Amino acid sequence: MTVRLGQYAKYAILLLFAFLALYPIFLMIVSSFKSNMEILTSPLGLPHSLSLENYTEVWGRVNFGTYVWNSMYVSGLSVFFILFISSLAAFYLSRYSFRWNPYVLFFFMLGLMLPMKLAILPLYMIMLQLHLLDTLTSLVILYVAGGIPFGVFVFYGFFKTLPTELDQSARLDGCNGFQVYYKIILPLMKPALATVGIVHLIGVWNDFFYPLIFLKSEELSTIPLGVLALFGEYDTEWNLLFASLTISSLPMIIAFLFASKQFIEGLTSGAIK
Amino acid sequence: MSMPVTDKTAAAKKESAKVRRGNWKKHLVHLFLLPALLFYIWFQIYPIFSAFLNSFFAWDGLKRGAFIGLENFVRLFTESPFQETFFRGLAHNVIFFIGIVLTKLVVAFVLALFINSKIRGKEFFKMVIFMPKLLSVIVVGFLFSLILNPTYGALNTFLKFIGLEELARPWLGSPDTALYTIILVNSWYGLGFAVLIFLAGLQAIPSEIYDAAKIDGASGLTMLWRMTVPLAMPSIMVMTILSFIGAFETFELIFAMQGSQAGPYYSTDVLATYFYRLAFGSVAGGESIGLGSALAVVLFLMISSATAILLFFFRRKEYEQ
Image 1 (cartoon, rainbow over the protein chains, first blue to last red):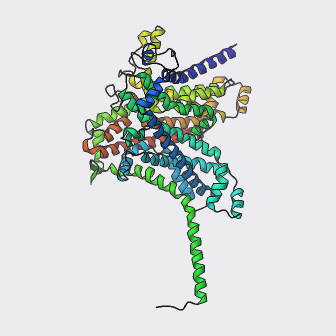
Image 2: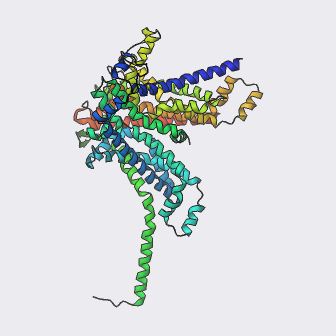
């Protein structure tokens, strides 16, 4: 009997926390379909009709389409270069045996712990000297640099599990180093690519700090910065605010529903070793 | 001056050219490493190093002046208003860390224990509780500033609806509750991640040892305290360290909910918001870079030494078991 009760209590508590986690997100999405009047008079109620008016308004009037495009551009480029550059480096570190390789690997691993927010002033001065302030390129460069340690860490671990016989036989067939990487290793490393890609996609898509520091022009804003501008300008039009928050969050939520395994694996793999 | 070219020297030349070309090709392999190393050193290592260096100089705007040793640090710790702001921020960071341990780590550990026990819907609970982590911190901050709005917000409306009107309050508008409210929002955001880390730790514990303990007549609570907690210690260590770093770096949530002034009346001001004002605001006048870098260095040293101490503490704990 007490075991039963304990079991019920477990379910009750877990359900309560599941509800607490989900309800604010649910409220955000539902409110994005309501009119401003509805939100203010009955914040907890369901919308009377499913109208997309808030979205068209946010998209057109407040330039949100541009912000979404900027975010896609920055995330796409950053993730691509992180995957490419750090997998090449991990290939070098795991498949060649230069005497400095262990030290280089350790040097990269230091980067997993660096609190880069604290180096924001030197980064600002570097971008100033490179004439890259207020460009999306500056963001891509910083995300790629920041993503390399984790990328090298995951790819190195992955390459170590791949047997070397494959690339040796490819070399005997006359492949050079890059061909081995491109033709043999790359097709085999899809799971590791997914892990690293997802982690950085979330990180870059959601990042607010770098855009806040490095972007000035409104038309270059990424979504999080656009949300900030919106909250300053339209702070009484909650329907638009909720719509902007939903636009920012929905892509990642939908991707998560399709690939939750990879998401969870990726985001926890940095912490557990 | 022309030299007669014999067949022999021509052949040798050709050969050495081949070797040289071979050498040159051999070095091409370093191109695999070069881009990563370049980006990493230029935009990660050098800036950190540079922040240390900059803190020892006098600055006028972007112009570096004389070497002044530790003067920036001395001013930061002794001069008004830098001194008060620093210690107020530090105190809030400490409260933030303790708050996260109590409302995120402890709760997450209990939830992980539940999910790890004989229960249905493990995957569902894992997924749902994790979901907030998918949002941008800035979105979380703004979303909750709407939910917690004193007049129109969902929370106070709900409290009125169930007849607990006296509990409704301006959660973010009052210095008494603002910091704690933000800590709770932070825990809402990160709870699922902590649950996953603890679950990974718990799943690594072999179930046979519990069977053996049961035969020996150990009670559930004894097993939890004497076996589960010590064996899950690596994951507890990881989460404690990550929470400490998170607490001392926390910026976006406070910026979104309270602005860079960390209101009301600086009641939510932490070292990172102070750093932001120092570096990019007008608090430090033309000396932003010197004083800002000094604060960055202090924060950096606090985070890294605390990480080292925690690592040492937990490692010793592990050996004691």
